[in-house]
Image 1 (tube, rainbow, N blue to C red):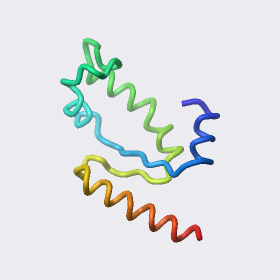
Image 2 (cartoon, rainbow, N blue to C red; image 1 turned 180 degrees about the vertical axis):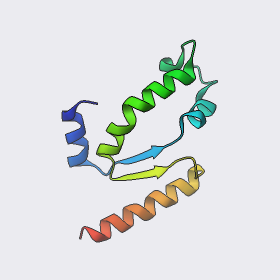
Image 3 (cartoon, one colour; image 1 turned 30 degrees about the vertical axis):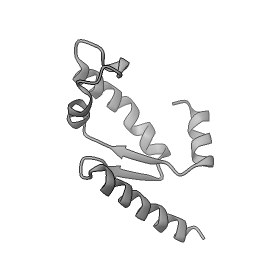
Image 4 (cartoon, one colour; image 1 turned 90 degrees about the horizontal axis):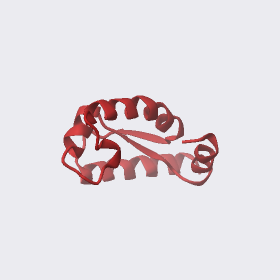
Length: 92
């Protein structure tokens, strides 16, 4: 993600990064044919490389980082909403 896009995101939104371990990402996506970047001989290796490259960028722009390995979808949404309310209240 280039610097201009990162800047636009930071100025115009509240960014949540759902951080999930690579092995768990692999488990979730390994049978999904709609993941063109993972249609390679070593999809786990590709995920590791993508994570290595993207994680620092995502952390840089994120207003909130959630450990996605610890939550199911509904509880993740609730946790994100709590953080949004907390950060919104502290900024007013």
